[in-house]
Length: 305
Image 1 (cartoon, rainbow, N blue to C red):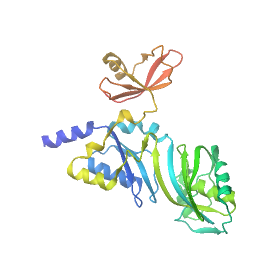
Image 2 (image 1 turned 90 degrees about the vertical axis):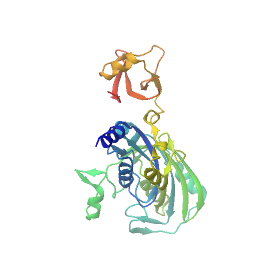
Image 3 (image 1 turned 30 degrees about the vertical axis):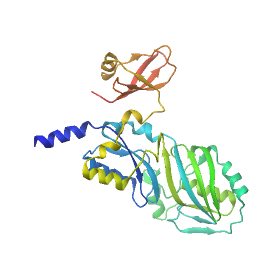
Image 4 (image 1 turned 45 degrees about the vertical axis):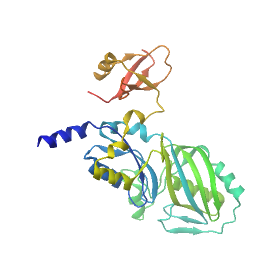
């Protein structure tokens, strides 16, 4: 029993990031469940859903690192998407019913020009078959019941759109966008703009925040590592989850102050609005935000007790 308790205490103290290359055919929740069972850590969650038909970078936070979720989830994303022109579907992807077929009389230059029109801050309406809630109900439940789904547009930012391959009626594009962007909606809207219709037939997330496919471990390889107990080699420290936040090293005295929820002075040379507080050992201690009135760091999330 003591060995079991020791193992529980060890696992309970583990905190970090697992970046998984999710295969097609699994939900993001399925992958989280595999990680929970494999690590024996119940506290785990992903930071941005990938549809079952999509593959690629799925960032999973485990242990106390799950408290970073709201920040990591808000990070920019990058995708490679395969679009099929000439057909629109009710789900905006290949799983739906075709609602319109049109001949594809689109040249590459015309397609590229249309792409450029979607770059920048734009209003995007989520797909009717999505998890967006309308008066407490998920849109896809309403759509499946045959009810009309009226979703409001949302502000998103598309930083870049690049045509990678032009093989009509299919095209492969690279998309760098803000969190909350629906690539399915982008495909449908692009098809409407071109006048021939389009839908998404393939999607691979290549980057989520600072994590890319280079950081991702294939799920099959991770499962093997769970079996032989070597999965720790893939665990990325929580301090590296938000490297776009500048870091400040905290003294022992500052750590004690922050641990009790109290503020610490901002160095006069520091002009940042938010920072990661790091220990001398490089471990994430807290997320801090500047109070402009007092010029002090206010702890927003503390990761040790």
